Length: 178
Image (cartoon, rainbow, N blue to C red; front, side, top):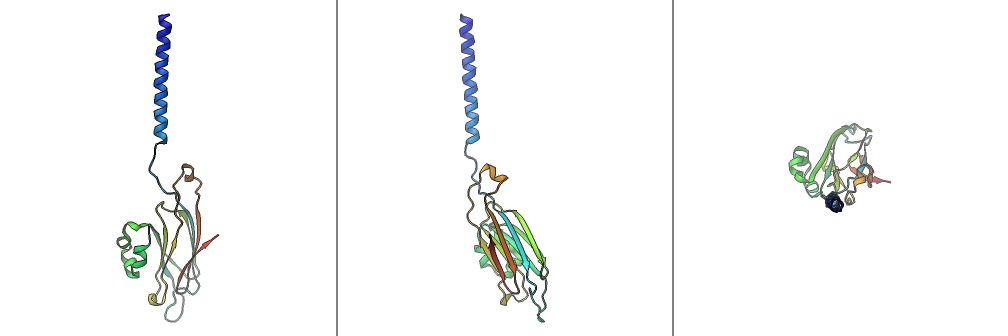
């Protein structure tokens, strides 16, 4: 009889210990992890117009384009073209998350598809026109605030934004597509 009680007591203690261990593990798995914003899936279609960046004789010429992912647009919208062209990393500082730079020929189209940095709130576009004073060389697009990420959003992003970026003769125009 004593052996049966000792065995029962031993099993009860082991069961309680295992239950507590499992409960502690479950609580650890559901504890708060750092709250991060969800990434936005973006499709950018960048097109240089046939008459882009005309020279003094009116002939179209290639144009340098930069696309920025920014935390906010304060530094981007207040800086002059040459500061951004020469020192964008120092001018934009911590607001700069990602940048792409390329040259487009007249009529050329470039597509960029990716997920944004979770902190991105603004897409900035910079175009190196010949006649800067007569051109709208900068444009911004504000993304909607991203929700906090769910575990399954790694594979199925909630937000998808399609933008058409037209590098016109003397102006940059950003339009959201449906």
